[in-house]
Image (cartoon, rainbow, N blue to C red):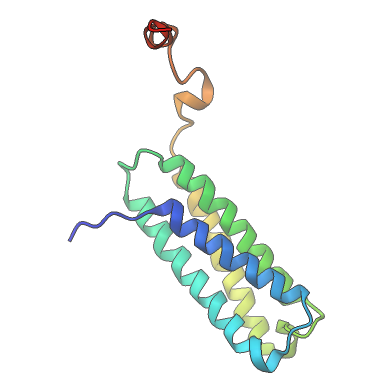
Length: 147
């Protein structure tokens, strides 16, 4: 089955979920209510980033591939920061509560770093549009003829 993946929307949702985790760490939340769910959310984001990146790497014909790589790279950085916040947080929700959580967060940070390296190594050359005019002067003249 050949299905279309909407990278932009998927990355947007993961960005929102990552922001929620970072906000949760700032607030005075009850760990009995939110710690387990936070760990589940972090695992979900990590797993989903893995899938999205794999699909993006395999999809060499995607028109806006470099933009998707840039977006997922930014998301990976934000996710890494959220993991760092969770690891170093002194609030109610923190990896400091358990050595198992600390090991898990370090593993997830390493995975995020590996994905960022993959993104850097897989991005295509800088597109011509980024280096100069996206529309040639002849094309621009043709477009403006009616005005």
